[in-house]
Image (tube, rainbow, N blue to C red; front, side):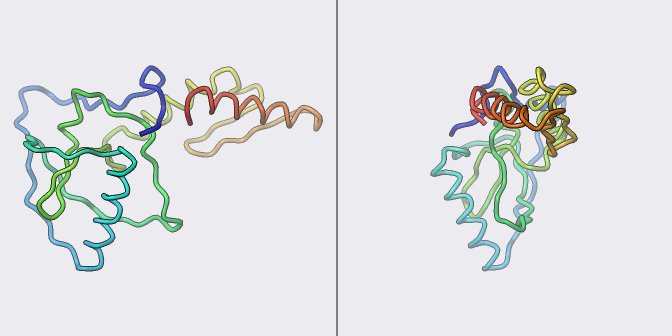
Length: 158
């Protein structure tokens, strides 16, 4: 799976080691929803974004929320020691992946964006959560500012 280099951003779960792992009871889905989930899991498996988990200590249910345009994001890697804590189950299979609703996933994303664009923020870029504005005082500088942004994205594999 391609994604952000781990030195730039990695998502960690800070769980007290004294807590017992949680395994949720498996949820049932409608036939249509189950097929949609299976298609998405197969797609993520093919992209190496998730992998099978044989003996997870932690296990969560999927909450299926389709996005209007059918896209999502799986670009920030998980800390290897936390991958087992992010397992989910469908049918008889268990998978490991970073869920969209993980606690502090948004903060991890914001730290990554701040790190990737730190030389531009305030100068020729403003960022608010997932919204980025490339700005220029002079029209002739605008393409150069876009070019700089795309170079930062490429350098960080985004």
